[in-house]
Length: 456
Image 1 (cartoon, helix red, strand yellow):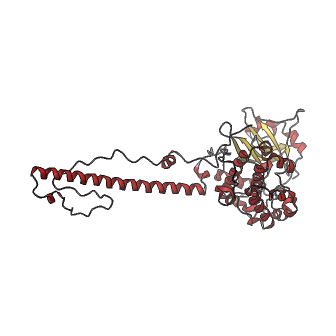
Image 2 (cartoon, helix red, strand yellow):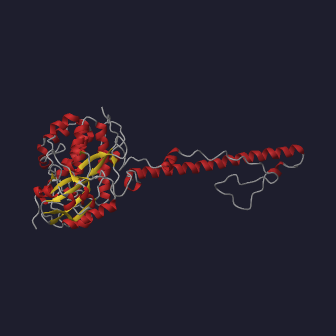
Image 3 (spheres, helix red, strand yellow):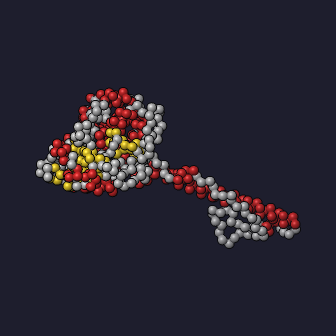
């Protein structure tokens, strides 16, 4: 069938009660310009409209302008997988087979909650002079990369326009949301062509040539964006203004295809900050090798395991919030989405240290009590000798018990004639402060922390 043009959708969407089947959309109204004409955001094969409803909700409605093979099956598999994964930085959506009626014919639409916020390049332009904010976003970016891979998901078009910084759960905080899942990879779609290759200023040259579609696709854009954030943290606004063209994050396609001729790479390799040079070298190396050999970002930056850090680097907490998923009600701090490998290892070490300290304290307490008991027994025996009630001092030495003494209680032996009252311990040892903090709740430095919105 032929697909409607943008003008056809503009006309149909102005009569929502008649041309939508979805109950929410039937009550809504499309956002318009000053002339009252709907304002779609046009993409590769679809137009996206904002539909505002009386209850205050707002929806993104994607109307397709050309045929996409396996459209319904693709979105069904992606939706099913994301609902199971419950990633806090994705947005739930619905594929409506009979979505909108245009000239008497029904066409499918994609309905997704409207996400209001700054695109990644807008955010960077606003905070290019604040390295602490960029560092926080960089650390979150590494954690997000790990969670995407653990969930078996590749976005496949990570670029400034598909990464939004939105209002976080707490006042004064920001959160990250990924949008546009048209080319997303999930395991059920392995072997199926996506029909997209992503933004040319972010993708590996191999993908642009071959149309690669797999879980490995995100390795390169994740590293590229991290390199940009690290470089801007060191180079500031002057670096941003020098290489921003309004449709990139410092890098352009020609930089990635011929790194040896790139003025940007040349400048980054001369930076004083060793972390910038390190990531730039890794990106150059990745661009020259097969896509799947691009190093995983989380292995480069999380926990500082292999990323050199400059001596004057600002000490900031990772403070970008992973916004809660609207459908799952997930909190950013939920352990199943937030546990990092290094955090788990640190927790193991803290617990091991605590139990060793506890066992040592118990053993020491047992020895002290035993010594006190023996001293008291000896004093009682001496008193009896002085009174003439005991003829031989040796009689005050208790006979060994028939049972074997316990290794952990050196004071099991008892005097035969008298039993001194053993002093009771005044209380258990003070709990280890690290153990107490673990009982109180895990440190929430992850998938979901908050970026304070610092100004000035």
